[in-house]
Length: 347
Image (cartoon, rainbow, N blue to C red; front, side, top):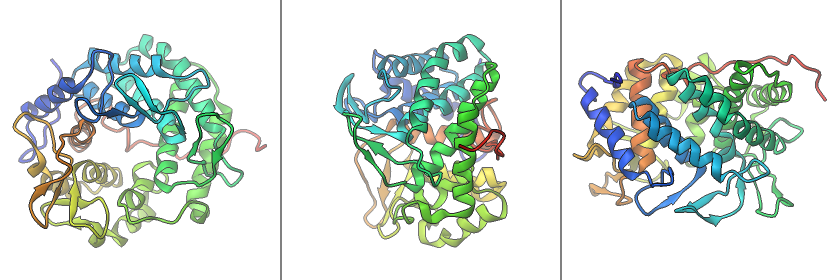
């Protein structure tokens, strides 16, 4: 029996298992994990939800989700930005969405130690990361998207997306090395992106009003230690609402469970366990009796908004609980990002 994440006074093992069951209840017969039943599916949130299934012991269901990713990948290594069912709604390509498969696959392997799964998913990961590397600019940052024809790239380098790509590249390199491959191109891409975060943050679009642009460079592993802690402390009062969670957007009275859970993961990666646990406790007001979590709350009037229990919100809570409780063997997936140095010639 799988040992479930448990955080004393915040989330019991039985509650974590119920959240995993709620995520399974949203999975389609094809393996897709939409935002909510009948809602859209995007490749990034689909993987995050699969990760929570791995943590809560739903191994077959998680592998069905990765099977869906494998089948839905296009020949060039990409996925469309949005599906409805298995039908494509938005055929454009988001570089971050495509990169995230590496995080999920490595995480599942850490939990299962299943070499056959890793080998089966390797072609999918390899095609995806090779494609993503084509989005990298000379300054080290990654362009965020291209249109469905593959002819036009959108040049903006988004801060949150690049921080997530940094993490995904690290996981992809770990997969390759575990399978005996030497991914020099990926190591170089990861290193150059890390140097952009360390030395020239102005290559990215300026931080927006969204909280993700605040904490994601820490969550993705590009900024850690004293630099990462300073970044978190600088805007803490701007986003954190006592006993409610964090604002998704700094000027709106709206707290969201997924963003709060991701900040929990970022704090855990910095070693700030006390504030991480306090934040995780602060969003339990979003929990539904069935184990799922509402997306957010407008605290000015006490209304849930949007009126949906999103699959990825439930998943983010599970991943945060796993990290702070050190439960699964994948609990360090966000904490243990490697700071790599250039080991191959720069071209």
